[in-house]
Structures are given as C-alpha cells and as structure tokens.
Amino acid sequence: LFFFSVLHCASIKNPIKEIISIFVFDMDYQTFMKCVSNVKDFSLPGKHAHILTAPIERRAQFEQLPTEFSEAKRAAVLLYCYPKEGRMHLSLIKRAHYDGPHSGQISLPGGKPEDSDQSLWHTALRECSEELGVMPQESKPLLNLSPIYIPPSNFLVSPFVVVDAITPRFTLDPREVAQHIEIPLRELILTKVKQRNLNQGVSKGTTVPCYIYEEHTIWGATAMILSEFKFFLEYCALI
Image (cartoon, rainbow, N blue to C red; front, side, top):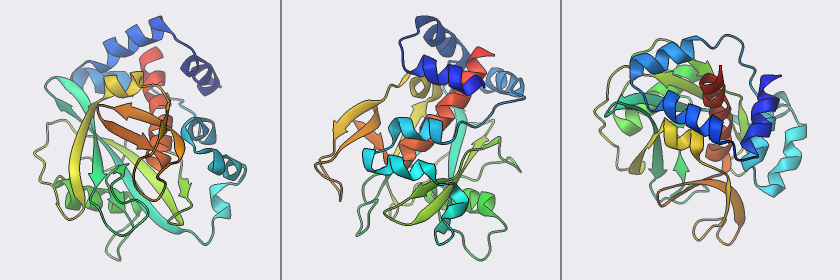
C-alpha cells in the first residue's frame, strides 16, 4: 500500500520529497483543492502513523481496535485548514490552564458531543465555533481520519479534516483557549519527530516523541492525529 512507502520516506531525509512538498503546499486555496481533488484511493495508515509519535507506554494499545474501547467516552476534533497570506494553514490551540489532564496542552479544536449534535462531525464543527469563533462553510468533511483512544481521559476521539475557501476572522473563547496557533501546511509536512522532556503538566519530567513548531511542543493524541494527516498531505504532494 502507498502509505508504507510514505512511512519509509518519513524515516529518511528525502530532498526531492521536501522540494515537492514545498511546491505543493506553498500555494493558495484553489491550487491546493485541485491537488487534493486528485486523491482517489488514499488508505488511512491508522496505527502505523500514530505509533510514530506515540509515547512508549501507549504503543501496546495499538494491538487493540477502536471497537474494543466500548466503555470510552466519545469526542471529536477538527483539523481546520484555510488560506492565509496566500498559503494554506491549519489551526491549533493551546488549552487554557484548568484542573485536568490536558491543561495547557497544544490541541485541535474539539470536545465531547452535546444532545443537540446530530453526529460527531457536527460536534467538531460546534466546538470549533465555540473555541475559535468560526463555523466552516463545508457541509461535509474533506477527510475522516482514524479514531484514536486517549487513556488519561478515556475518550475515543474522531478527527475530521475540513477546508475553508476564505481567511477566517477568529474570535477566541478565553475560557478554553489560551493561544491560537496557525501553522502553515508547508511547515507541518516538513516537521520531523523530535524527543522532548516535558517541563509542565501532569506528565512533567517525561520524555515524549513530538513535533516542535516555534516554541510549541505538540505531543500526545494531537501529534498522533497530525502524524496521520501528514501522510495524507505527503500523498497529495507525490501523486
């Protein structure tokens, strides 16, 4: 399958792939969507992508299928992509500090469903609207990524990718969002997995695989979701 060849490429320096990636993702919305529309047969790599940024203690869980987490609570997150200054970007947020396992962490907009949500897709849209003050215009996701289980909070999270055609005007909810992080897709696709020692939060002192963007350490479930999304972006760049 294609993702195994991408997995191999991800583990080595590949200047040709990086040049292609810069060319493809340093572009406007129209060109980006034209490239994405060529994708017809992308196979989700799932745990093969997640394991690249999974903490060591979590890797044994990849032998289990999501359906085995029958007691897990459900949640959804949104990978919200949009053009800004001529380049496609993705929104991340730094969570506000609170008494919980994900306090102060870098995450994707999202949360748990409410009774009014028709589906987890609608949960992701609503949470994005509440946290970032924007409601994506698309009626369906561009891509559904693989669900991922988060042990500390016992959530099974469904990630959805959506693309907007215009640069949004964000209005952050300060109760939930301490900082809005806009990462260009070019930067995301070129970001390599690093090892970092956490200096805050409930996992302080733990060394974890992560992505580094500017001063931000992106680890845990967010990094694992982004790892699979990076496979999709590389697929788009190379077809």
